[in-house]
Amino acid sequence: MNIKIGRNDPCWCGSGKKYKKCHLQFDEKISHFENMGHIVPEHSIIKTPQQIEGIRESAKINIAVLDAVAEKIREGMTTQEIDNIVYNKTVELGGIPAPLNYNDFPKSVCTSINEVVCHGIPSENVILKDGDIINVDVSTIYNGYFSDSSRMFCIGNVSEEKKRLVKVTKECVEIGLEKVKPWTFLGDMGQAVHEHALKNGYSVVREIGGHGVGLEFHEDPWVSYVSKAGEEMLLVPGMIFTIEPMVNMGTDRVFVDKNDNWTIYTADKQPSAQWEIMVLVTEDGHEVLAY
Image (cartoon, rainbow, N blue to C red; front, side, top):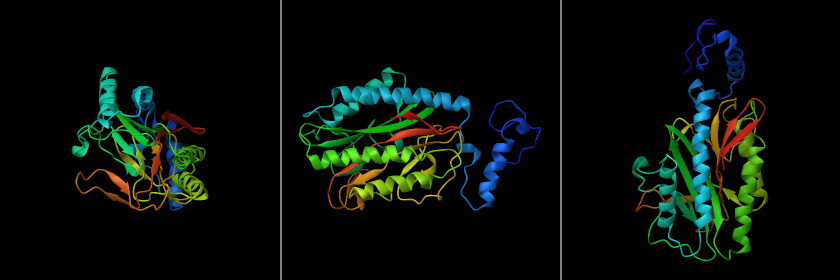
């Protein structure tokens, strides 16, 4: 719950200005949407300019780490080798891999191949083969600020069906991004993502979504990609969240590996693809912080 602030009190954003000269009109606009019955963001998930700058610096490392993976990923490589690249590059740049020991996750990155939807655990025993598609999901802590993005990689001679899945999934992210504007809704983005996937004959995972990020690894809001336009949380300048739909070639149903309690597979063992970007809502649109 947001605490009521006097007009002449310092603004909640930390600018040092009086509330009436800073965020009063902003909050009144949010209250208008709330009074109409919409879900609105708490102050705690609206980032200040100083926080945004710190998150932006973290995101630069996240991108550099994914670039390092892109340079070296190849057929015959183990997913543990990918983990080594991520750990070493992150530390070299002054960061900390956010997944490492997060809720007992044992590695520095998630590596999800073919029918693995997400949270694949790197291993010396998992070797990239000709024809594989893999999602490499990197998350970084730098000076206490979090960033998060992932990319798909096609290994060797990938089938046209898998290539198309990877391509359409990226299109879903790009089409969703076009809907990210202040004073619209998360559902506007979610519906655009879902419709593009369905139009191409694919399904979108319902149980797992995106999330706010920046001051913590996972923050509010939870982000659905099967939502409806005009619904879900109001988007306002200063919000940062991920767009990361998991698009399946077959059913949208998934299950968790009971042996590790992390790895999530498609129920029908058909391939899945995911791209993840981290986006900031700005005064006039959006800014992609990590991709």
